[in-house]
View (cartoon, rainbow, N blue to C red):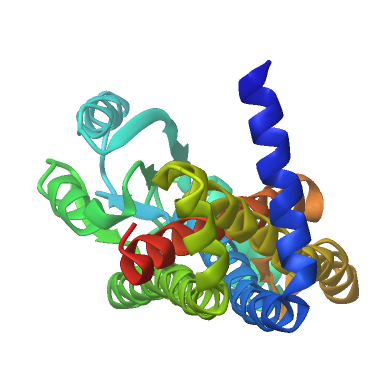
Length: 301
């Protein structure tokens, strides 16, 4: 019970300190708020880029064109060799018969219908295909080469240059947003530490009195740590509100997509709640760490 009373007193003193030094607290809260807004934007951008990348990866398909005169037995043999590859799962391989391809082409154009309408299976120059989706898009080039080496596979296509470039660009953007988020968190900790430092310097006499009456180092440090936690929580309020309402409004305004059906935004629920929780935790933890470092570094406690 004594521990709870001490904890409650420290929290109460921390709240009093925040409002007693309101101008300094407001400066700290403002810095945290601005930084966490940028962190929120970086997190939203990062998650949406990751989501878009997954959609692209899911839709990238390797098309293996089979020899024109291939037999049914040879088709099954090609299939067995394809699903045996490390980067391919059985349910991601689909056989498309050349007559189905012909029907789709004829349905799309009267010209194709006129030319291809009289073709029999034996006369058709169109090739049967296997459409294949890989497990790891980063290994798509290696997988395509392995499929190309399979007997009775004539040509393999997957949009080589464009896919490789997309993977590289998405990887750079994803890593860049992670770096931005980490950098902003460090900046937030630095700002809080410096603000708390000013507060501490203005309260040297108070701390000296606490030492004279026998207060231990931990008893001196704890109120400042809780003060940093409170500043972090207050600084996270506006970023959380912007995340909850701003992202939902953005999603509704664009109808869940950005510029094209190909770029789908992450649905607001439960994404905005996880992001808000992350912002609150970042504000609290960084506030506590920043305060702790300020006390330790500048007061040499």
